[in-house]
Amino acid sequence: MSKPILSVNQVGKSFKDKRIIENISFDVHKGEIMAILGPNGAGKSTTIRNIMGIMYPDEGSVIFHNQAAGDIPRHTIGYLPEERGLYKKAKIIDLLLYFAELKDYPLKKARKRALEYLAKFGLEGKEKASIEELSKGMGQKVQFIASVIHEPELLILDEPFSGLDPVSQEVFKKEIKELAENGTSILLSSHQMNLVEELCDRLFMINKGKKVIHGVLDDVKKQYANFKCTIRGENDVKTLERISHVQRIEQEGEQFTIYLDAHIKPTSWLRQLPDSINIEELSLDRISLHEIFIDIATGKNALQEAGVQT
Ligand SMILES: Nc1ncnc2c1ncn2[C@@H]1O[C@H](COP(=O)(O)OP(=O)(O)OP(=O)(O)O)[C@@H](O)[C@H]1O
Image (cartoon, rainbow, N blue to C red):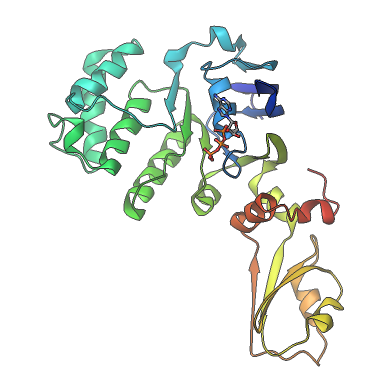
Protein backbone atom coordinates (compact mmCIF):
# COMPACT_ATOMS: atom_id res chain seq x y z
CA MET A 1 0.00 0.00 0.00
CA SER A 2 1.13 3.58 -0.67
CA LYS A 3 2.55 5.80 2.05
CA PRO A 4 -0.25 7.13 4.27
CA ILE A 5 -1.51 10.69 3.82
CA LEU A 6 -2.60 10.79 7.44
CA SER A 7 -1.16 8.84 10.37
CA VAL A 8 -2.72 8.90 13.80
CA ASN A 9 -0.18 7.45 16.22
CA GLN A 10 -1.10 6.31 19.73
CA VAL A 11 -3.20 9.37 20.39
CA GLY A 12 -4.62 9.88 23.88
CA LYS A 13 -6.70 12.69 25.31
CA SER A 14 -8.20 13.43 28.74
CA PHE A 15 -10.60 16.11 29.91
CA LYS A 16 -9.88 16.99 33.50
CA ASP A 17 -9.25 13.54 35.00
CA LYS A 18 -11.43 11.66 32.53
CA ARG A 19 -9.72 9.59 29.88
CA ILE A 20 -11.66 10.15 26.64
CA ILE A 21 -9.50 8.38 24.05
CA GLU A 22 -6.55 6.11 24.56
CA ASN A 23 -3.86 4.72 22.28
CA ILE A 24 -5.72 5.45 19.02
CA SER A 25 -3.69 4.56 15.91
CA PHE A 26 -4.71 4.34 12.26
CA ASP A 27 -3.66 5.55 8.83
CA VAL A 28 -5.55 6.98 5.88
CA HIS A 29 -4.13 6.34 2.39
CA LYS A 30 -4.64 8.15 -0.90
CA GLY A 31 -8.06 7.56 -2.41
CA GLU A 32 -9.35 5.33 0.37
CA ILE A 33 -12.45 5.69 2.50
CA MET A 34 -11.64 4.96 6.10
CA ALA A 35 -14.57 4.81 8.50
CA ILE A 36 -14.37 5.66 12.16
CA LEU A 37 -17.26 4.03 13.97
CA GLY A 38 -18.51 3.69 17.50
CA PRO A 39 -21.53 4.26 19.75
CA ASN A 40 -22.48 7.71 21.10
CA GLY A 41 -19.77 9.12 23.30
CA ALA A 42 -17.17 6.58 22.11
CA GLY A 43 -14.66 9.30 21.21
CA LYS A 44 -15.00 9.66 17.43
CA SER A 45 -15.41 13.44 17.35
CA THR A 46 -12.65 13.85 19.93
CA THR A 47 -10.34 11.81 17.67
CA ILE A 48 -11.32 13.97 14.68
CA ARG A 49 -10.85 17.21 16.64
CA ASN A 50 -7.34 16.06 17.58
CA ILE A 51 -6.61 15.40 13.91
CA MET A 52 -7.97 18.81 12.92
CA GLY A 53 -5.88 20.60 15.54
CA ILE A 54 -9.03 21.94 17.24
CA MET A 55 -7.52 20.34 20.32
CA TYR A 56 -4.13 18.73 20.83
CA PRO A 57 -3.41 15.18 21.98
CA ASP A 58 -1.97 14.63 25.47
CA GLU A 59 -0.08 11.66 24.08
CA GLY A 60 0.85 10.48 20.63
CA SER A 61 0.95 12.39 17.37
CA VAL A 62 -0.96 13.18 14.20
CA ILE A 63 1.16 13.29 11.05
CA PHE A 64 -0.11 14.60 7.70
CA HIS A 65 2.32 13.52 4.99
CA ASN A 66 5.45 14.18 6.99
CA GLN A 67 4.17 17.12 8.98
CA ALA A 68 3.02 17.18 12.60
CA ALA A 69 -0.49 18.43 13.46
CA GLY A 70 0.59 21.97 14.32
CA ASP A 71 2.12 22.41 10.85
CA ILE A 72 -0.61 20.66 8.85
CA PRO A 73 -1.41 22.74 5.76
CA ARG A 74 -5.12 23.39 6.39
CA HIS A 75 -5.87 24.28 2.76
CA THR A 76 -5.32 20.66 1.77
CA ILE A 77 -7.88 19.38 4.28
CA GLY A 78 -11.66 19.63 4.06
CA TYR A 79 -13.76 19.23 7.19
CA LEU A 80 -17.46 18.77 7.71
CA PRO A 81 -17.87 19.17 11.47
CA GLU A 82 -20.54 17.39 13.51
CA GLU A 83 -21.91 20.73 14.68
CA ARG A 84 -23.41 22.33 11.61
CA GLY A 85 -23.53 26.07 11.48
CA LEU A 86 -23.50 28.55 8.63
CA TYR A 87 -24.13 32.26 8.86
CA LYS A 88 -27.88 32.38 8.26
CA LYS A 89 -28.14 35.78 6.54
CA ALA A 90 -25.36 35.14 4.03
CA LYS A 91 -26.04 34.27 0.40
CA ILE A 92 -25.04 30.72 -0.46
CA ILE A 93 -22.59 31.69 -3.19
CA ASP A 94 -20.92 34.34 -0.98
CA LEU A 95 -20.51 31.79 1.77
CA LEU A 96 -18.98 29.20 -0.53
CA LEU A 97 -16.58 31.74 -2.02
CA TYR A 98 -15.65 32.87 1.47
CA PHE A 99 -14.72 29.29 2.43
CA ALA A 100 -12.68 28.97 -0.78
CA GLU A 101 -10.87 32.23 -0.02
CA LEU A 102 -10.03 31.03 3.48
CA LYS A 103 -8.25 28.11 1.82
CA ASP A 104 -6.42 30.32 -0.74
CA TYR A 105 -8.34 28.69 -3.57
CA PRO A 106 -8.73 30.72 -6.82
CA LEU A 107 -12.14 32.43 -6.75
CA LYS A 108 -12.98 31.96 -10.43
CA LYS A 109 -12.48 28.20 -10.13
CA ALA A 110 -14.37 28.20 -6.82
CA ARG A 111 -17.41 29.93 -8.38
CA LYS A 112 -17.49 27.35 -11.18
CA ARG A 113 -17.20 24.47 -8.72
CA ALA A 114 -19.83 25.98 -6.41
CA LEU A 115 -22.39 26.26 -9.23
CA GLU A 116 -21.59 22.74 -10.46
CA TYR A 117 -22.01 21.30 -6.97
CA LEU A 118 -25.25 23.20 -6.32
CA ALA A 119 -26.65 21.74 -9.55
CA LYS A 120 -25.42 18.27 -8.63
CA PHE A 121 -27.13 18.50 -5.24
CA GLY A 122 -30.46 19.72 -6.63
CA LEU A 123 -29.90 23.34 -5.55
CA GLU A 124 -29.59 24.84 -9.03
CA GLY A 125 -30.57 28.52 -9.10
CA LYS A 126 -30.36 28.81 -5.29
CA GLU A 127 -26.95 30.50 -5.23
CA LYS A 128 -28.43 33.90 -4.34
CA ALA A 129 -30.72 32.50 -1.63
CA SER A 130 -29.70 32.97 1.98
CA ILE A 131 -29.00 30.01 4.27
CA GLU A 132 -32.10 30.76 6.38
CA GLU A 133 -34.28 30.14 3.31
CA LEU A 134 -33.01 26.56 3.07
CA SER A 135 -34.26 23.42 4.78
CA LYS A 136 -31.93 21.63 7.21
CA GLY A 137 -30.94 19.02 4.61
CA MET A 138 -30.30 21.70 1.97
CA GLY A 139 -28.13 23.60 4.46
CA GLN A 140 -26.17 20.42 5.05
CA LYS A 141 -25.55 20.09 1.33
CA VAL A 142 -24.15 23.64 1.28
CA GLN A 143 -21.90 22.81 4.21
CA PHE A 144 -20.69 19.70 2.41
CA ILE A 145 -19.86 21.83 -0.65
CA ALA A 146 -17.98 24.24 1.63
CA SER A 147 -15.81 21.34 2.82
CA VAL A 148 -14.83 20.25 -0.71
CA ILE A 149 -14.85 23.53 -2.67
CA HIS A 150 -11.04 23.83 -2.49
CA GLU A 151 -10.36 20.27 -3.74
CA PRO A 152 -8.84 18.97 -0.49
CA GLU A 153 -6.47 16.02 -0.48
CA LEU A 154 -7.97 14.73 2.75
CA LEU A 155 -11.67 15.09 3.52
CA ILE A 156 -12.92 14.52 7.06
CA LEU A 157 -16.67 14.00 7.33
CA ASP A 158 -18.19 13.84 10.80
CA GLU A 159 -21.70 12.33 10.51
CA PRO A 160 -22.34 13.59 6.95
CA PHE A 161 -25.62 11.65 6.58
CA SER A 162 -27.39 12.73 9.76
CA GLY A 163 -30.63 14.56 9.09
CA LEU A 164 -30.68 13.69 5.39
CA ASP A 165 -33.58 11.97 3.65
CA PRO A 166 -32.80 8.66 1.86
CA VAL A 167 -32.54 10.34 -1.57
CA SER A 168 -30.08 12.94 -0.29
CA GLN A 169 -28.14 10.20 1.52
CA GLU A 170 -27.74 8.45 -1.82
CA VAL A 171 -26.53 11.70 -3.44
CA PHE A 172 -23.90 12.14 -0.70
CA LYS A 173 -22.90 8.49 -0.93
CA LYS A 174 -22.35 8.75 -4.67
CA GLU A 175 -20.35 11.96 -4.28
CA ILE A 176 -18.14 10.52 -1.52
CA LYS A 177 -17.45 7.46 -3.70
CA GLU A 178 -16.58 9.63 -6.70
CA LEU A 179 -14.26 11.83 -4.65
CA ALA A 180 -12.36 8.77 -3.44
CA GLU A 181 -12.17 7.33 -6.96
CA ASN A 182 -10.61 10.61 -8.04
CA GLY A 183 -7.93 10.34 -5.36
CA THR A 184 -9.36 12.18 -2.34
CA SER A 185 -8.63 10.42 0.95
CA ILE A 186 -11.68 10.30 3.17
CA LEU A 187 -12.11 9.80 6.89
CA LEU A 188 -15.78 9.22 7.59
CA SER A 189 -17.57 9.04 10.91
CA SER A 190 -21.13 7.76 10.74
CA HIS A 191 -23.81 5.79 12.55
CA GLN A 192 -25.48 4.68 9.32
CA MET A 193 -23.92 1.25 9.14
CA ASN A 194 -25.56 0.27 5.86
CA LEU A 195 -24.01 3.31 4.17
CA VAL A 196 -20.64 2.76 5.82
CA GLU A 197 -20.71 -0.84 4.70
CA GLU A 198 -21.32 0.20 1.10
CA LEU A 199 -18.69 2.91 1.18
CA CYS A 200 -15.68 2.14 3.31
CA ASP A 201 -12.53 0.24 2.38
CA ARG A 202 -11.28 -0.03 5.94
CA LEU A 203 -12.72 0.77 9.33
CA PHE A 204 -11.67 1.65 12.82
CA MET A 205 -14.20 0.91 15.54
CA ILE A 206 -13.86 2.59 18.87
CA ASN A 207 -15.72 1.98 22.13
CA LYS A 208 -15.21 3.87 25.39
CA GLY A 209 -12.22 5.61 23.86
CA LYS A 210 -10.38 2.42 22.87
CA LYS A 211 -9.91 0.48 19.65
CA VAL A 212 -12.13 -2.58 19.33
CA ILE A 213 -11.72 -3.41 15.65
CA HIS A 214 -9.43 -2.12 12.95
CA GLY A 215 -9.03 -3.47 9.46
CA VAL A 216 -10.34 -4.08 5.97
CA LEU A 217 -14.15 -4.35 5.98
CA ASP A 218 -14.27 -7.86 4.48
CA ASP A 219 -11.57 -9.14 6.84
CA VAL A 220 -13.45 -7.74 9.82
CA LYS A 221 -16.62 -9.48 8.72
CA LYS A 222 -14.82 -12.76 8.09
CA GLN A 223 -13.02 -12.58 11.41
CA TYR A 224 -16.12 -11.78 13.39
CA ALA A 225 -18.55 -14.40 12.12
CA ASN A 226 -19.19 -15.23 8.54
CA PHE A 227 -22.81 -16.22 8.56
CA LYS A 228 -26.00 -16.38 10.55
CA CYS A 229 -28.79 -18.86 10.01
CA THR A 230 -32.34 -17.87 10.85
CA ILE A 231 -34.75 -20.70 11.54
CA ARG A 232 -38.45 -20.28 12.18
CA GLY A 233 -40.25 -23.20 13.78
CA GLU A 234 -41.18 -24.72 17.12
CA ASN A 235 -37.85 -25.76 18.63
CA ASP A 236 -36.19 -26.12 21.99
CA VAL A 237 -33.25 -23.73 22.14
CA LYS A 238 -31.24 -26.46 23.96
CA THR A 239 -31.45 -28.68 20.87
CA LEU A 240 -30.12 -25.85 18.74
CA GLU A 241 -27.33 -25.11 21.22
CA ARG A 242 -26.10 -28.69 20.85
CA ILE A 243 -25.38 -28.19 17.14
CA SER A 244 -21.66 -27.79 16.57
CA HIS A 245 -20.01 -24.54 15.41
CA VAL A 246 -22.69 -22.34 16.94
CA GLN A 247 -21.26 -19.15 18.35
CA ARG A 248 -24.51 -17.92 19.93
CA ILE A 249 -28.26 -17.94 19.44
CA GLU A 250 -30.83 -15.18 19.71
CA GLN A 251 -34.47 -16.13 20.17
CA GLU A 252 -37.58 -14.13 19.41
CA GLY A 253 -40.63 -16.33 19.84
CA GLU A 254 -40.29 -19.12 17.32
CA GLN A 255 -37.56 -17.39 15.41
CA PHE A 256 -33.98 -18.38 16.20
CA THR A 257 -30.98 -16.52 14.83
CA ILE A 258 -27.95 -18.77 14.99
CA TYR A 259 -24.56 -17.11 14.60
CA LEU A 260 -22.06 -19.56 13.17
CA ASP A 261 -18.44 -19.76 14.24
CA ALA A 262 -16.02 -17.77 12.12
CA HIS A 263 -14.43 -19.80 9.30
CA ILE A 264 -17.15 -22.49 9.22
CA LYS A 265 -18.48 -23.21 5.74
CA PRO A 266 -22.24 -22.67 5.74
CA THR A 267 -22.83 -25.66 3.41
CA SER A 268 -20.98 -28.04 5.79
CA TRP A 269 -22.86 -26.56 8.71
CA LEU A 270 -26.27 -26.99 7.06
CA ARG A 271 -25.48 -30.62 6.17
CA GLN A 272 -25.03 -31.59 9.81
CA LEU A 273 -28.35 -30.15 11.05
CA PRO A 274 -30.28 -32.86 12.96
CA ASP A 275 -33.53 -34.17 11.45
CA SER A 276 -35.31 -33.43 14.70
CA ILE A 277 -35.21 -29.69 14.06
CA ASN A 278 -38.54 -28.27 13.06
CA ILE A 279 -38.02 -25.90 10.11
CA GLU A 280 -40.84 -23.80 8.69
CA GLU A 281 -38.50 -21.23 7.22
CA LEU A 282 -34.73 -21.07 6.98
CA SER A 283 -32.47 -18.35 5.67
CA LEU A 284 -28.74 -17.91 5.62
CA ASP A 285 -27.17 -14.44 5.57
CA ARG A 286 -23.85 -12.85 6.03
CA ILE A 287 -23.59 -10.91 9.25
CA SER A 288 -23.88 -7.16 8.75
CA LEU A 289 -21.68 -4.43 10.08
CA HIS A 290 -24.76 -3.16 11.90
CA GLU A 291 -24.89 -6.38 13.96
CA ILE A 292 -21.19 -6.25 14.72
CA PHE A 293 -21.65 -2.67 15.86
CA ILE A 294 -24.63 -3.47 18.10
CA ASP A 295 -22.79 -6.38 19.69
CA ILE A 296 -19.89 -4.18 20.59
CA ALA A 297 -21.95 -1.21 21.64
CA THR A 298 -24.12 -3.35 23.94
CA GLY A 299 -21.09 -5.05 25.42
CA LYS A 300 -21.88 -8.57 24.18
CA ASN A 301 -18.48 -8.54 22.61
CA ALA A 302 -18.72 -11.90 20.93
CA LEU A 303 -15.38 -11.07 19.35
CA GLN A 304 -13.63 -11.79 22.60
CA GLU A 305 -15.84 -14.78 23.34
CA ALA A 306 -14.82 -16.18 19.96
CA GLY A 307 -11.18 -15.54 20.79
CA VAL A 308 -10.71 -13.28 17.80
CA GLN A 309 -7.66 -11.03 17.78
CA THR A 310 -8.58 -7.40 17.16
N1 LIG B 1 -14.80 19.44 25.80
C1 LIG B 1 -15.12 18.36 26.51
N2 LIG B 1 -15.01 18.37 27.86
C2 LIG B 1 -15.31 17.27 28.61
N3 LIG B 1 -15.73 16.10 28.08
C3 LIG B 1 -15.86 16.03 26.75
C4 LIG B 1 -15.55 17.15 25.88
N4 LIG B 1 -15.78 16.76 24.59
C5 LIG B 1 -16.20 15.48 24.66
N5 LIG B 1 -16.25 15.05 25.94
C6 LIG B 1 -16.63 13.68 26.37
O1 LIG B 1 -15.84 12.77 25.63
C7 LIG B 1 -16.58 11.60 25.32
C8 LIG B 1 -16.47 11.34 23.84
O2 LIG B 1 -17.17 12.36 23.12
P1 LIG B 1 -17.15 12.42 21.54
O3 LIG B 1 -17.95 13.62 21.15
O4 LIG B 1 -15.77 12.30 21.06
O5 LIG B 1 -17.95 11.08 21.17
P2 LIG B 1 -18.53 10.58 19.77
O6 LIG B 1 -18.03 9.19 19.60
O7 LIG B 1 -18.23 11.56 18.71
O8 LIG B 1 -20.08 10.53 20.12
P3 LIG B 1 -21.40 10.85 19.22
O9 LIG B 1 -21.61 9.66 18.35
O10 LIG B 1 -22.46 10.96 20.28
O11 LIG B 1 -21.16 12.12 18.48
C9 LIG B 1 -17.99 11.83 25.85
O12 LIG B 1 -18.11 11.18 27.08
C10 LIG B 1 -18.07 13.33 26.02
O13 LIG B 1 -18.93 13.66 27.08
